[in-house]
Image 1 (cartoon, rainbow, N blue to C red):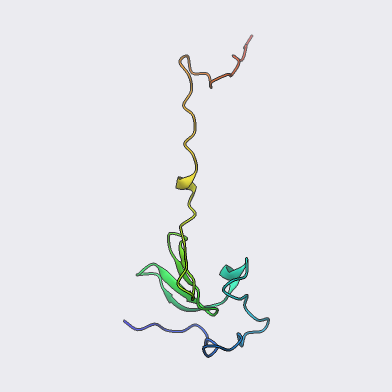
Image 2: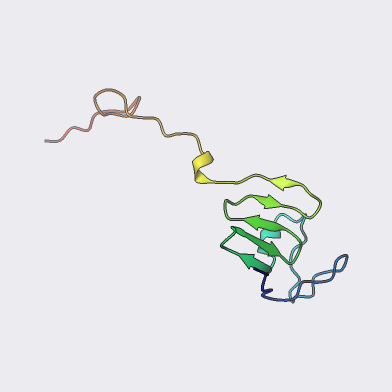
Length: 96
């Protein structure tokens, strides 16, 4: 299956042709660039600035650097309640 571009990417080595211009691949907001090829069945999109975004939030930059996925599952686990059902260090709620 071939990609169906959503818009025409700028030629290699040239600035973005979109107005306003897409952020460069090395900019902190590079993910805001316009998608030029989208393959949801394969889990990736190509942005105008040459960045490949993956469904798992990982990225491949045009210079070959990889940015690993940033997922909520990467957060530290939530501490389980201590015996008795109270969080560790928690106080009991008195109900009258």
